[in-house]
Length: 301
Image (cartoon, rainbow, N blue to C red; front, top):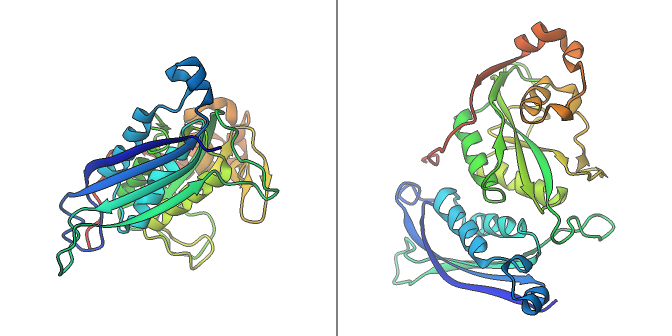
């Protein structure tokens, strides 16, 4: 496929960087996008519905730069690329991202990165997502370190890059399951997104959100700033070492089943509460504490 959609010099103010001043004050960024897609149907039919709408691409990139918060340009560009790949019909994306006034002790007009990403293949090399096929996916979010609500809010902001109209369950507070003693209580929720991304693309996004939250993997089931689990992705079934979908332990965890039931009762087994001591046992294990968290400022320091 050689058809391309190009967007040049999208300028947006955003809060991104390593230095404290960069994490507090908006700075100007410039974005170029090159998207590979099949433009043949649109050329024949002269119909917007037959092509990839570049207005939607621009809005996805603008939203991420304006609303997300990253330390590195590489991470910000990766988030833009992942979001664009969620558009039906998009095969490969190149993102050129420039910071126009970098804080350097020299007269430099801009610094930037260029990355290219394509839809990830499965272990056999086949496509994870069929072009034009949008599926419903569910992800579980949890945090028990630091600004728990803020970590969840920033993860939701990142996920809105692939689905601005995502749905999020209420937030529940739960005791840790497994791991070392003395951990703090978790805040948990489940998110539903409509996306053309496959399970592996979503896993890559989940891991990027965890890194952005400063997660350190040191102890199994240990405390973490952010945990993002891929629970369900349409009718996909994967049984690899590093990824199992549906999630193998989701039906063993009340902190997944309760918020999942809030979003779609048909996805949870009938009578699931009996496995956790009935309604009273579930109420003791998972306590609803509020609605989905709202926008959060980036951490400082």
